[in-house]
Length: 295
Image 1 (tube, helix red, strand yellow):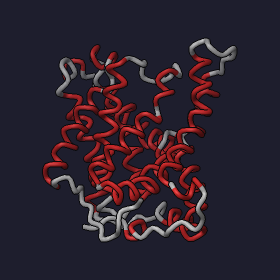
Image 2 (cartoon, rainbow, N blue to C red):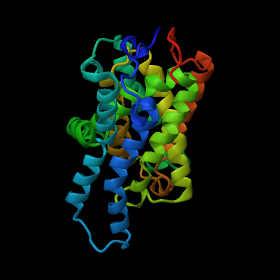
Image 3 (tube, rainbow, N blue to C red):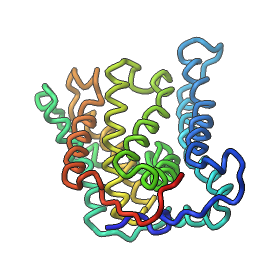
């Protein structure tokens, strides 16, 4: 199946400023700058380097605001390079819901299954199983909604998948483009390691995070290329992963090793799945393009 219909034929830039000559680079620079201008001072404060501290609710709100940096960057660069038509095209993919039922099943059931299988192979996880399924299921819808709105999907996906992925696929191909996007997406999060409210900034955790996010990006590219470039479906997928991993798997399997290395289940599950997709699709991840690569 071909990839996005209205992202393959990207309009040429109308002006020749530095930003419009290099829209993809400009997008990443702005996305990093907007987020890190918020998150770096927060991390410095949490580690006593800056002489102020914020209460936990303020920290949560600040981080939620920073998650919208990729979306803001996407609309800034799209507006400057493609004008109103490009902005409208991006907005339309927020509500592009038509896709085969199998893709919704993969997003809402397949992703949790992958995370769950990654958890149960971790030594000691099954023995630590804590049967609190009913309360978790009751709380899941609200947790999903809050994650969707404030936990990253709504703020990030229009940038990562809506803007960057189509251009990276045309420029470098789907697999290399996904690896580039995955690494940059992971590094974009790095100030949060020192924020005091995230995974501790140990070398194993940071390496696992890069591997996990890159593998997840490959899976998301495969889905993206089969749902006509729907930003909505990638947002739902992002929300499912975040909610299920943090709000379901972590309480169900409180194994000591997962207290120290909480990223192990998702790293294992997504890496195995990504490798299978690379082999099965021969690295194409469902992508076909007749357009000339972007410069």
